[in-house]
Length: 134
Image (tube, rainbow, N blue to C red):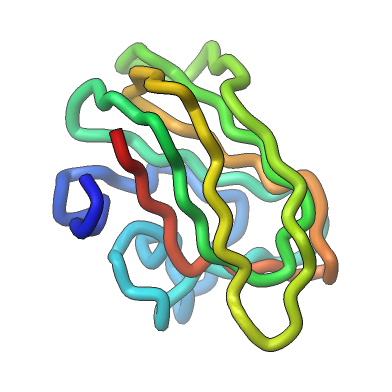
């Protein structure tokens, strides 16, 4: 899936804990790091991405600002319930440039991924892109 936006592959953001009409959740998967989704403060913040079909995922890449701690959970059914933890990562702070992080998921299969930002380096965080590789 590298090189394609998740949006162009039929993925959708079906839930985001914060919304702003100027930075909608769809920006998370549009493949453009100049657009972004921004939290409205307080933690945890989360968003859920639904894939068009069950998807094999080895690595998740995320570009962001001010994210400190992230958990990723997966679901393998059509219903958005019963998630199980598959990864977590502490991000290093950056000044003036994006945090680019990868999280190894060891070849899981998922229909939904839930991203839970449990803490940040500021009251607000932004996520500029999420991508997956098999």
